Each structure stands twice: as C-alpha cells, then as structure tokens.
Amino acid sequence: MLRETIRFWRQGRAVEVAGFHPRTTLLDYLRLQERRVGTKEGCAEGDCGACTVALGRMRGGRVHYEPVNACILLLGQIDGAELVTVEDLAAGGTLHPVQAAMVEAHGSQCGFCTPGIVMSLFTLYHEGARPLSREAVNDALAGNLCRCTGYRPIVDAALRACSAAPEDGFSAAGDRTAQGLTSLADGRDVFIGSEERFFAAPASEDSLATLYARHPDATLVAGCTDVGLWITKGMAEIEKIIWLGRVAELDRIEETAEALGIGATATHAEARPSLARIDPDLDELMRRFGSLQVRASGTVGGNIANGSPIGDLAPALIALGATLELRRGEATRSLPLESFFIAYRKQDRMPGEFVRRVSVPKLKGNEVFRAYKISKRFDEDISAAMGAFKFTLDGRRIAQARVAFGGMAATPKRAPETERALAGLSLDEPSTWGDAMAAIARDYQPLDDHRSSAAYRATVARNLVFKALSESASGETRATRIIGRRESLEAAE
Image (tube, rainbow, N blue to C red):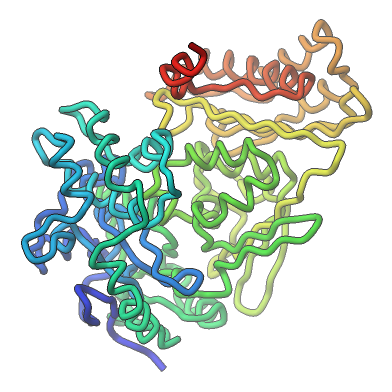
C-alpha cells in the first residue's frame, strides 16, 4: 500500500503534506508555506547553521532531538519526525531556558545567526551529558558560525542553561509526543508525484530494490548533506528522488568479535560510538566530521556512495581493510572498498544498484591504527589531506602496512609504493624511515586548488608518514588541539 503524503508531528499534532515538488527544502517550506521566518537562510549549503531546526525521532524508547540544516534537508525527509523551530520554544510568554540564558549572558549581537544557535543549544539542553564541559559546548556549536561576536557569552549561556536535566514543555510532553510519533510509523511506502517526477520513501529494502530497478535514473538520498548542495548551489533539476531514511534494514549497526557492520543509512552520529571502539583516532576523526548537524543527517553509506575524493571516512575504512556490500534487485555482491572508487565521482555501481552496508575489520592485538585530518579550519572544514595508516607488527617491526589518503587524488586511494617501503621497517630505527616518507611522492601527484597547493599536500603527506611511525613507536598520540589551556595552567598553580 502506498501513502501519497508525508506525515510529521508539529506543535502537538500530526500534520500531512501532499503534492509538493520533490526538490522542496524544509527551509523553503517553513518560510514560504508556514511563514515561520525565524529560521534563516545564510549559506544555503549547510555550513553556517542559521537555518538549524530540531527533529525529534524515537530512539531507545524516547524522543531524541537532533539539530539539522533546514536549507539542505528535503521536506520529505521529515516524515515520521517531530519538527521544532525557534518559534516553538517560548511558552505562554515565557522564554525557553536556553533563550533566557542567551539574553542573560548577552549571547547575541545582530541576531541573524541566533535562532540557529538557540536551536543547537535546545538539542544540547535535551541530550547533553551532565555536567557539561566547555569543550562539549564548543563541539555542539561547531556548525553555527557567528561573524559579529565572540563565543564566550554563548558558551556561558549554554553552560548555565544545560547544567541540569531538561525541564521544559517538550520534556513534559514527552510521553504524548512519543505516542504521536509511534502513531505515524505505519510501515507504508511513500510515493508523491508521477512516474516522471516524484519523491519516494520506501519502507523496506525489498521495496527500495524494486523501485530503484524501475527507476535507475532516480537520485538516491540518505542525509542529503551533499545532494542538497546540488539543488541549492548547482541548481540541479532532479526530478526523481528516492529517500532511504525509512528503510529500516539499512540503518542497522552490528558488531562481532572480528568486525563492525554498518548499514548504509546509519548516520555518522550513530556510527561514531562503534567506530570509536575500534580506535580512538576514529572517534576524533568523526568528531571533526562536518558539524553536529551534518553528522545527525549524513550517512556512512552516502559518504561512500557519493565517491568524493575529499571524504574523510573512506580513506580510514580503506586502511582498515573494509569491504562493501551492494544490492541490485535480488542480487547482492561484495568488493573491497578501495575497488569501489574508479575515477572522479565514478564508482563501480551498476544502474539500479545501491550500497547496502560496509564491513570494517576490527584491529587485532598486533595491529596499530592512525588517522589524521589536515584542514585550514579545525572544526567543520573540508580536508586538504586526510591520511590513514594500519600497521601489522611483528614485535617492533612492521610486517605489513595499509595506507590510504583522501584529498590527494581523484578518488580515495591506497599508497602501494609507501606500503612496500614500510614493510620490514623497525619502529626503533627512525633513521631508516626516509625511504617510506619519500615513497609517498610516487603514490600521489596532488593538484592545486582553493584548499591547498599541491606542494603543501605533498609535504603534509610525507610528514604524516613520519607522524604515524613516530606515534606507533611511542604508543602515544600527540594532541592537535589546544583546549582548556587557561584552566590547565590554573590547576597547575
């Protein structure tokens, strides 16, 4: 059975919307249809956070709120969720605790970005660990860029408002909202439009396989953190969109003693804890993966299927030896992740075939892993270069190496020359590491672009080989961010 509307929870009631254009963004719906103009358009590409709203979905038996960028989120993607905007926070003339704290701490100047900041803090208010650290607040605000004031009063407001368990109208209505969201989950396929132009949201993997086989020219959307830019920046005339967010089979994360299986539609936020258990470097990599808004929407499978040469996750998973599973109709197949990337924006994927899951081997006792992201801006920035290394050790000697880089070629790519040069090296003899460092120049011929020069990338890649060897030899990870320096000095005194 098909449903020809999307349904979502809004201000305590179910809302149904039909007949919209498949490319309609949530931001356009809010501003042009609901006339709720508190949500702003700034960059229109999911970077500045002025358009941030909150989506509530059922997780672990309760309503879980996450921030999303309304400018690049399609309207159809809020099916089954609660939508919360800045206009919804105050109740009966009383400001929400986050809003009140922002006023008391003088956390706003021109105010254009303030609604998005408030919505990010609203989700932190409901989800943040207690007590909150200043670093945790900074991470939560990494996707909200304010250009006319400092962040100190904003962070102060967050620490003040989010110091205790949430106690607002949304927490009071939690049971009723949970019942409402549960009532929306009807398990029916959504199809809005015609065979020539539609927004579709299959409710099962079999339905997805059937629909995509019938429309192999359709664009698959998971989080829309990249496709959204095709629409808002590239003005792409996408007429057929299949959203994967309702395919329950694709969002599973399963662990065994040997490997981690991540479904294609598992978000970066959902996958991060499991990846962190493989190695702390993956935790840090995912913390710097876009912003909280991007990690809440973007998916592991989407990041891979998009095939970006500057994607951070693919090089790390390639270094770990990940394999990819794809499905077309009833047939499935697997291949090494590095074999999936053929050329720039071109992957080994047949018409009607979609990424199903990725399997990531866990580290063995004699293996070490290192991953490094190099970017101009520490938070929420695209990598100039991203390097990942896995060394299999025989005592203090490298028996085997897997090395992969992003940002250095037209695809995420292994470094075979460097791998061969690393094999047999002793971690206790730095004087012998030079050949491996020099070999990286034979593996990659990077390009100049606005993120960095080819010479800079080549130098960074060479240095990262040394850094990976040095840290593996010492067993220590050298910090790349100075956090809480003042507090540390005060504690030492």
